[in-house]
Amino acid sequence: MSGAFLPAGVPASKRFFDLVLTIPAFLLLSPVQGMIALLVWLVDGKPIFFRQPRPGLQGAIFTLIKFRTMRHLVDESGKPLPDGQRLTRLGRFLRATSLDELPEFWNVIRGEMSLVGPRPLLVAYLERYSPEQMRRHEVLPGITGWAQVNGRNAITWEEKFQLDVWYVDHWSLWLDIRILAMTVWKALKREGITQPGEATAEEFRGKSDSV
Image 1: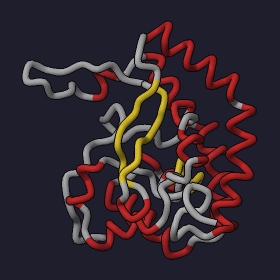
Image 2: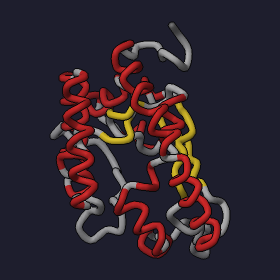
Image 3: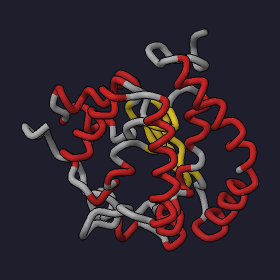
């Protein structure tokens, strides 16, 4: 087995687990995704999807797909306005319920992501990581992860990266099952969606000796 079905360096058991859960979920939730796509188009217009290059396994770049939750608004210099000004009302709801993440099932099916793993962040962050922080790319990025169920955006970047590396060192299918169960509970409680004082999360600006 090779290619998209089993990306190099990914345990066969993890990939099988992802596909067994993701393919039925993708099909069953297709009507929900269709309704969300229609709502985004009617309320916020096009584009319906947010596509952005993100680093995956071993830093390889892939295109992340999510439902769009922000408007494209820039200042006089062309720099995007703060997230709080660009985030739409529908976008806030989609983020609060994690429904904006549903298109990422396609990334999982393609072998670019896993259901569970460190969240794929910005390409610009690659040069800002310490060697220890960079270890988060030793596994496939995930729709949810150990950092997401232990604080999500309510904890610091350093704490997130410590949790990501802990996951890399302690991965097992049982841990993935535990994280998925915790994710459902966290999504229902809507915990850790934003950082204090931020509409989403502040930018990661550099390395830290604490990790």
